[in-house]
Structures are given as structure tokens and as C-alpha cells.
Image (cartoon, rainbow, N blue to C red; front, side):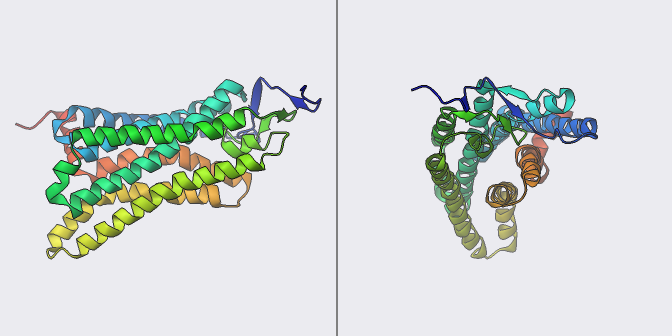
Length: 308
């Protein structure tokens, strides 16, 4: 069946991004460039330190290393194209690049949610079942759980990406965003997309509510266990092992809820997307490095050399 005249098979999309900004593009470019470079440096340092320092060869830091890998992929999926648009007005993006960007953005976001739930479970075992922790969370189990996490995140993103990429699109191919997000691209289709929207909503709820529920339940058990500790020192030590992860979880879910559940303007959506895709990956390594004495010590040993 031939496509009707008001349909087209585009070769590129046009990302509107921040094209309405007539002034301030260079300062914005410099700001985003600094954030991106700091994000890369911070997360790559976490990966480097966790890999090299034998004292950090523990489940918590193994998961932290994987979280940093996700953050690097996550922000790299969006930021370089945004910088290119701000600097050179290159707003066009090919279909292949657009849907690749969409896939990696969704896959990394889903993987991060599952990994944060896995890290919460690790903290639950360490605090609530300390005697069996080494048996329940040894290296082979960590590797298997991490591989499963990556497979879940990257598999779950295939269906919405493939579904949207197979749609016919109208002649207006301008995406009112600075990257190829699901719904801004979906709005360009000429056919009825309600079924796909429902499928995406259901899958998003599963990928968001499942890990969130697991994380919440884990922390409820952790809080109960901490409250039952007789020593204030023990309670403080137990809470300190969870503080960094809890901070990252809070930033991740609060931003995601505001971004995807809010009914604000498209301009507000862009601002929240910047926070979600750039600021959050920047915060995570600094939260862990500044609050975690083992990471701080490992960084100090690398910088100054290990103390004799």
C-alpha cells in the first residue's frame, strides 16, 4: 500500500532545542560543556578507582562502578548533540542517530533505576543480614545480578524504540526538544498512536514502579533494623553506609516524577530534561566521593601515593 501524500519518509529530523534563544548561546554552551566534562571526569574517576583499588573490590563499589558507567553513557547520549546545536546551529539529526539516541537514553534510564534498586538490596543484606552477607553477595552473584540489570534496561527499551521508528511521519518533522525523547517524536506521527502510548505508559510504570517499590521496601527494612540497634554509634554507622545511595535515589526519582508526571510547559520540560540528563549524572560521583571515606581515601592514595 502506497503512503498518502501527506505522509513522508524523512531522512532527518529537526531538533528545535533552544533555537529561540537569540542571545546567550555561547555562555550556555560553556556552562553545559563544563558540566559535561566534570561529569565525565567524576564518573571516570569512580570507575578508575573502583577498578584499581583492592580495598574497593566489594559489592557496593562494584555496583557504584556500574552506576558511573551508566551515567557516562547516559549524558553522552544527549550532551554532545546539544553542544553542537548551541555552537554551530546544526539542528538536523538523521533518523538512525535520532532513534539510537532515543534507545540509549531510555535504556540507560531504565538500567539506572534497576541498578539503584539492586544497590538498595545490597544495603539491606549488609545491615539486616550481616552474618550471611558474604555468602549471599559474593562476586559471582554480583556479576550475575549486574548483567541481569543491564539486560533488563536495554531489552525493555527495544519495544518502544522499534515501535516508534516504524511509524509514518507527517511533513512537519521538527521535534520540540533538544534530543529525541519518546513522546516529542511520537507526536510527529500521522497515524493514531494511542495504542503505542498505552504500551509505553505500561512499560514505563513497570520499569519505574517495580524498582521503586523494591527500593522502598528495602529501606523500610533497613530503617526498622537501624532503629532496633541499641548503640547510637552503630545506628550512625549503619545510616552513613546508606546516606550516599539514598541521596542518589532521591534525586533520581524526584526529578523523574516531576519530569514525566508534571503538566508544565515545553520550556519547563526542557529545563527538567537538562537537570535529569546532565545535572544528575554530575551529582552522583561527587555525592559518593565526598560522603564515602573509602572512596576519598582511595582518591587520596592515587593522588598522593599510599601512606606507608
